[in-house]
Length: 245
Image (cartoon, rainbow, N blue to C red):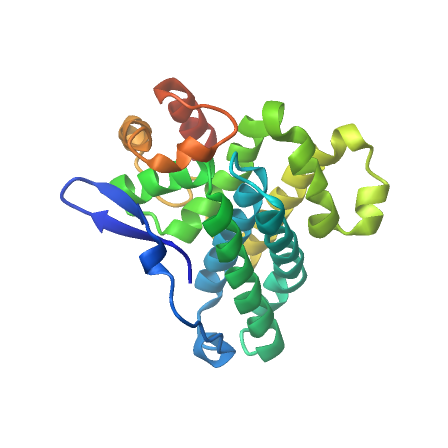
């Protein structure tokens, strides 16, 4: 549904990203019946992956009005439906809503690309074989905190679709970005309670000795090119260590 493909190379312990307009389909059919038997933890992981697509597209260096519109609606729909669908996998309306949101988030990042969260996630998947959606769930708040100095205002704008108008109106402008990150952490805690979706690298059974290898692999991933804040080896290692526990 997007212009991006990721291929794992287990011999080199990396995930390779490819971007091409040739990857776009002529048509995409969203059929929620295909996801009705998806287990809760995979539903949760793929939902948080879609949320990460939308959030990172919204704060990307390549963001634009088109990607912003799709990101905004994707975030709103995911927040409104993910928890219920994880609890009740047979909810067809909720499944269709999440399929639409995932598609919108894909359109958003195909127009704007992603950033440091995907950068670290691809590296972690390549080195330690952590499922991509699980890695997104782990790294999303950590990556947003790293980007706060340069993307705080943009992150704060996302409090409207993520928290709703009441929460947005009652949160001072200078506190909205931090509130967004707090709400994402609350979502992760709730998903952990429902289906044990890992919130940390330790909960995902990542060997701590592998953290330097993940940081080195992150420098080979192109997603960081679109991140508002530059990242080097020491930055990557610090973020990975922060995400460990």
